[in-house]
Image (cartoon, rainbow, N blue to C red):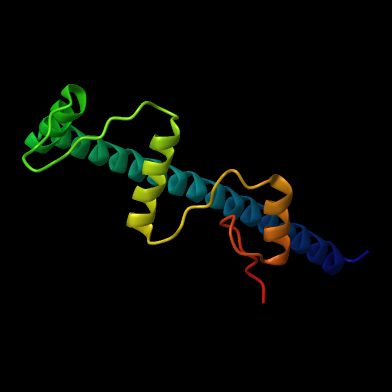
Length: 137
């Protein structure tokens, strides 16, 4: 055990101690940076929610919303419009909804009268109808 060995051991211990402290500082900085990033994301989310609420408030104050709400609640119509009021869940209402969906989407809406077994067969084997098609070729 010479003085050189003691100096080398002390230097190695100091180097290890310094490295360990550096790793601790880097880890702490990393965790603090993650917290800062999370807080920034939360701040952006709150700002977007505030903007969205401001837009909603403007919409609810607009004449367009007021007119639409009056028409909906009182059953009023504009010139040239026709109102069709059907009882809920009637076959005529379902047929009317399907026709409107077909007009809007250009696709035929699947009937719900199709049996569950037939729907599964259509799904599994790529049969037409039922709205589900096998996407694999």
